Length: 191
Image (cartoon, rainbow, N blue to C red; front, side, top):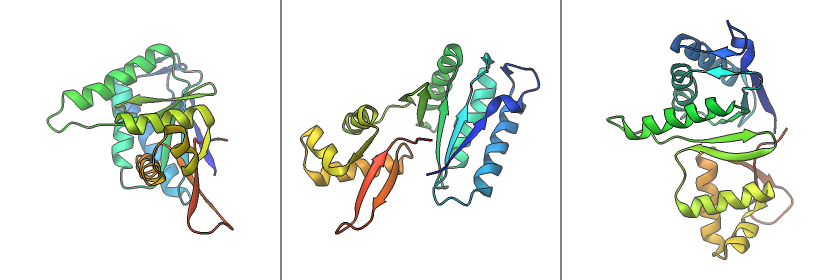
């Protein structure tokens, strides 16, 4: 698994600040170019906000949710990392606004990493999927059998949950070779 790390601070006009819709559009277009140039089967892109002190709602609205919606048909995992506390709150507000205030609600669940800890930002998955995500957050990597055992559910249900989380682009799936049948391990993105 290759993670393309995009240091968003390189797109700045004013050091430490990301503001306005046009800059959000420019940042989104940079990521789209990166995705389109990638030769990876399922690229993982980390959008790192380290060193960014300020972002405004307009920038975040044009960048993150619009990027996710533009890449809906692409097979790519995107996660955001290291937002300043106020910027994280602004992103949560942007995602909530898209879900609650639009004629056609847009439910966006985003993988977020602060330091070494992963969490979800935006709409939370239904409780059974969230339970599986919590096991992955604790362990980092799991098999379907391990999810079934941890949640005390049939392996078929565990497999369905893992596939749904994979389809939501929240986890990475790696196929195990040399084992009978199709067996996968699921994990959080890692460098």
